[in-house]
Image (cartoon, rainbow, N blue to C red; front, side, top):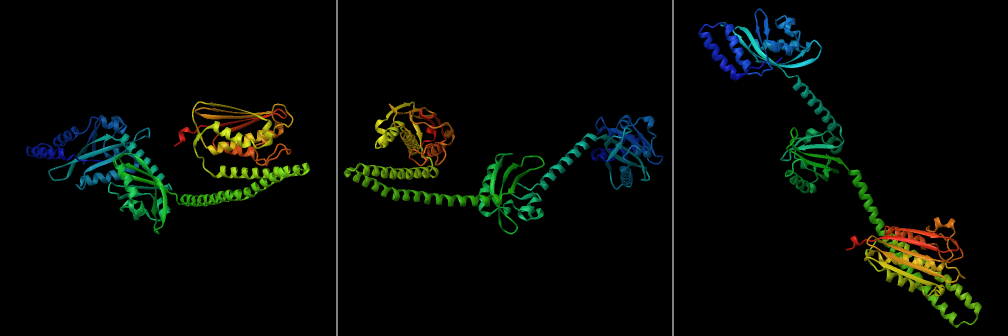
Length: 520
């Protein structure tokens, strides 16, 4: 139970009391008149009571009955009767507060827990003032009470909620740091001990920049300055903090401007330790740098080795042609042709290895591709092959718009597909042909190469794109052609499909996206 004295009305009441005493008005009249003053200051839901101290006569109104949960018939009167309505744990405290009020040491202003007959708890605010007799002894107390149960329950819920969220913060592994407009830390969570080694009390009252590596001060200040003009906005940061041993700890988190949020009024930093991740990222970056170096060296080696190997092969081919031209013995000429074919196979293998190496290690270079020129050039490159002389090669180009992708890779695709179509022609078939078509749209290029060659057995079709796989040992080659085609097509984000029937030819379909939007 709490008893509070309204000072403004008390002044008026004292003046009235003096006047009434001057007129020899009875003490009870003074009490009632003064009670009316304080009652008038309370809301309509307030209950009023007066206590005649000597005979312990306590009187209250109907609102008091309602607030205390009992009827006038059940109320025996007297302070002890009222105490029976109170929570047992409050009685001793209320008696002490009444004593302090009667001795003039403290105004009666308290909160009392009331227990209704149904055992429900209710909180009431109680205030009272005291009237002394002419001898200066306390004679009457009069006051008011009103129900504050709803407010108390709301207050308890807020306290419970605050405890819950504080528990979340204090048990979180992230650091929560609140600082005022000047950058002074007003709160920092206990997790700072685990991450930076500081006790929270060591940092409270210091500037938030004391936590941060000096080279990151400017970046943090700039972000906070931008936030100050945007209430309740949040930005992500990655920064270096300094621990208790002056070592750098990489942290990542968010800064929020909550200066205008009731109960917070702070710039809030919420961040966690990412040192292990940063060390791992640095390790990966170093490894990538090393791999790039190795790849560059490997590219240089492949280029140099292929050049060094192909140069003598070309010399050998030239010598074989020269000797064959002058040789009259047909058996020897056959041997020379076999030698020439073996050298050409080795040369083609070197070319394939170079193409594979470059496709894996070189970035896609986007430029305009003219399929007509590319196909024409590939056909001319095959003219030196004896088998081509009897093959009819048909081309068809449909172009809606310009096409953009990697020109060198397209050339390799066309060369390999045409080379395979020539290589696997049937020896004695009438009217051998190869048809190559390209349909260019704004979205894709659709390339089709078909022939009426020997075809591929069905049980080999799912393996023809494997490295070094050859469907027929009767034909020359290392088994890299279609594998390289597939690798390049995937590098260009395209698709490749093959359809074939043994003895009835093969058709390869290639779809490659038009990268016109990525062309600079």
